[in-house]
Image (cartoon, rainbow, N blue to C red; front, side, top):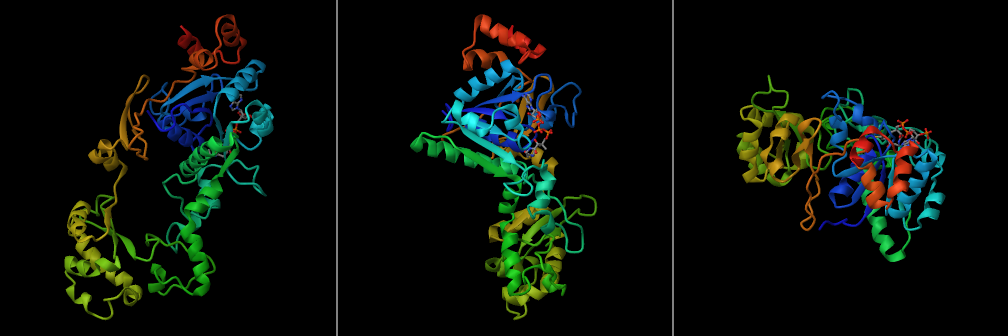
Length: 425
Ligand code: COA
């Protein structure tokens, strides 16, 4: 038994943002039916291909536990099938360019007419307003959501982050909107429209930077390194390098091997409560009582000196030794883990956060499993579907087509593909 057992999702998503959302819902137990254009499918199937002829990792890692139907939603017969799917499903999720569903003839009004209980959930680049018609990808959302202007170093360019906060972040927001709408439907019996705009999602994740924007009015941001360095603040929240986002100063520091290993670093937070222990560990006990160093406000204009001294110690240890030594003293530190280390991390594999999946076209590959663990809703990660792998199964088992009617649909060209035909045999 899983949390979303019995919920059917009509998955009209593609690329990353929408598919992350529906993948999560699938992991929570929903039956996710991915609708793909016949012969083409989700564009990511053929993007960044590493194994010729096989679905790319880009696609496989975003579409686990789903079923795939190839359906031309602009074909007359395809529209009939789509109407049946809308009647049958609890949620329609889409992340087409603005207006694409209307152009297909399936705007919100029509969808509600077909099924008043359905929840229609959309990812768009921007919310209503000046930019609502724009097509948007990850990095655009990071830039328009305030993340890029606040990431990087004060004397460098704006920087986009590796974490896909625009796509996967918005997918997460949308998933929460969907389950909330399902919960509300229990009481009202009605569906509703759910919108997660990528800009909004990124702004939400950059909340602390908007906090700092307002704090600037009251004077310089004293916990930012640039304060200690005497660099004046401008009108907007600056890029803060690796400064921690909270009130406890933190930096990335070199560890043993940094000269050759690009990830031999640790994050180190000089949390006030752990200060005395930090002084002991790094061999600077005099800082415990020296008035210039003993309190957080006294240290603010000396953070470079403080972190240089700590780094002189961390450079004598590996990033894992730093962790081992500091943890028992509740000194907050964390190794900079490379993707190679994450891929090989036994702990992450044991919890199912990193999983190995078998795929008929590409053999075994690694993926990120469900990052949300529910004690009563276990997740088993299943490989992504081949294009149209379940076309006939969905037409017959989910929609109840059979005999000549099913044959007619397959022959109409609205769904027909060699793979769909294979699956029918
Ligand atoms: N049958 C028939 N037509 C289909 C179809 C199907 N099963 N699935 C998609 N199509 C059509 C759409 O109706 C659309 O046709 P139209 O242009 O005539 O309306 C067309 O395929 C292309 O869809 P579109 O969404 O415009 O794809 P794109 O590749 O041009 O743009 C994005 C991609 C991501 C930029 C765009 O979809 C977008 O801005 N989405 C919202 C924001 C978002 O999610 N961005 C992040 C992506 S990770």
